Image (cartoon, rainbow, N blue to C red; front, side, top):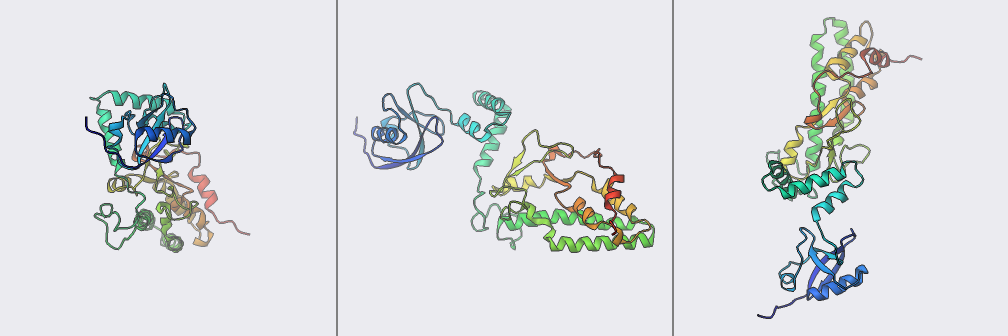
Length: 333
C-alpha cells in the first residue's frame, strides 16, 4: 500500500457536548486527535473524530482528503453524533415544540420515499443558497434580478417595498372620498387625508419597518433580515412559527411579497367608515388625527403575517367602531 502523503491542515473542532469550536492544525489524524483532546480537556483513550455535517468517522486515509477548515467533532468512548438533531436542538432551544420537531426530523430522514421529506429538503436547499450577509447589488446580482437599477442595496429595495405597501393603504383612504355625499364632509375628509400625507412623508412612509439597517426599535426584522410572523389578528403569536429572510435569496424575496401587513382593526370595514362618521357636522381640526393615522399606517394596528395566518373575514375584536369614534374625537381644553 503506498505511503500516504501528509501536509499541515487546519480544522475547526468541538466536543459532542460543546458548542465552542477551536482551531487545530495537524499533519495526521493521530496528531489532530492528540492536540484536540489537550485543547478540549478530554481523555485521549478511545477518542474518535467525525465530520460535523453527517457523523462520518474519520480514518487516517480519509483525513488526508479533507479540505482545510472542515468542521469536526471529537467523540469520547460511547458517544455518537447526529449533526441535524444537534442543530435543531440548538436553534429551537427551550421552545415547547422542540421534542416533537426533532422526532419528526428523525422520522423524515429515515423515510426516503416521503413527499414531506422532499419538500423539507427542497426548502433546505433554498436556505443553503442564503446570501443574507451580502448587501450590495454587485455582491449578489441574482437577488436583484427584475429590480430597477436605481436600487443599489437590498435594504434600499426592502425599504421601498414597505413604502409601496403603505402608499397602497393611503390610496385606499384617499379613494374613499368619492363615496362621501356631503360636499362639506368630503372637504373636511380630504383635509384629514392631506394632513396624513404630510405626516407619512415626514416618516418616509414607514419604510424602515422592512429595513434591516435601521434601528431595532423601528424595524420588524432582525439585523440579519429575518422576519417572524406575528400571528392572526386575534392571536398573540404565530403557532406555526413562520419565518422568512427575504434578504437571503431571490426566491425568498419573492415569497415575502405574499406576507401581509394586516390591520387588526380593519381599515375598510371599521377605521375609514368611523373616520367619515366622526367628521359628520365637524371640522378636520376636531379629529384626533394622530389616532387615526396610527390605526391606518403604523405598527400600533398593523401585524406582519404569513399568508396562511392572514384571516380575510371580518375581524371580530372587542374594540368596535363606537370605541374608535370616541377615541378619534379631538380632546378640547
